[in-house]
Length: 461
Image 1: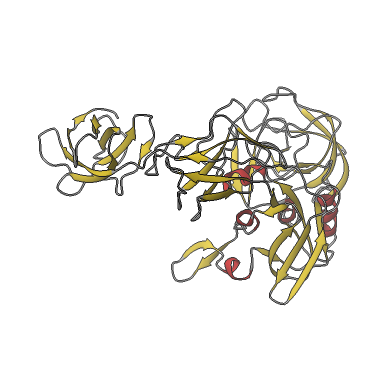
Image 2 (image 1 turned 30 degrees about the vertical axis):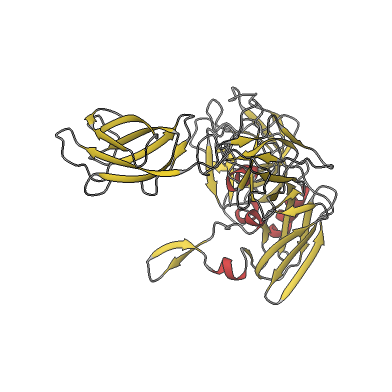
């Protein structure tokens, strides 16, 4: 599966699934106003009906969202392109967020689509699998082989994964292994991080990658392929269950298949967590948050690790970059009994020697229960109202259940000494509308088992 996104400039774009990498890793996908999720790849589309050809760009549509037209000269016809003229204008969705810039002087493998736009018979856009030929000659070779009905071929690129939406460098010299129940293939990536397994026999394969100093991203490498099968019992299509048994890569006769792989540089932050007396604190989650280009902390930790019996932990793997390291330091969730504690300043990771971060935690907070009682405008208990809590820093404190009982009540474990804003909303229609009921109250937890009473009123919340 690949996530194609229009970044408005695809001079160096191969079908590198960086956006999907980020999605799977829980990182933000930057600026994709036009995006689409698809399992289609150049290999799967070469056997289709759309024209596929190699072309030199004679004129491009300009930067940004594009303004002018794009003109191509066809240099090689791969499939369904015999009737196309040697030179042609092609639509690129210029002037929209789906604009696909093909840069003048660059060569591309173009997957043309029939165009409904005035003045163009064919077009490409942000979701189109067209790719720049530079650094992706292996894809063109595989497409040529598939178009000529050659033996099956598996291709891919090994990427070094990064954070903060940085481009993913390629990793040369990595050993890639494709394993099926009855055979195994092993190759080494070339100087461009590319691997090719020509003549691979049909079947299902698991993919592994290894290189000293790196750790594989197993979640990404064994990801769902996007393949659906029809379930006769449920009468619905669902992800192919055989992928979890035999592997996600399906090789068919005389086809090319693409499967990129990801690795992390094996870099660490380690240290020891103690209490105020210097005694080790075990079973505490330590978090590492990446820092964005604007200096802001990411919403979710890139890595977490639990302390052992000696209070020691190791966060790995961590790409080059600056991090916020601490305990219970999420900007959005208050999840640990210890108050937020973080290392003062940034922790920089950029190769050995790797940093050591030791922290002394303040006393653990004691817990009590906040009893929430919710009533409607007429004073009657209100069942099924949605309840959220945030602390004084705006961090969400998740209740074990988020809706009131049939009696209009909800008991939420909270920390003594904290102040919370309790917000309650109920939408009679199930959608946000002007007749929704809502209310909020600020509660300081200074006594055992405090109570918050809310009478909701109409309004948009």
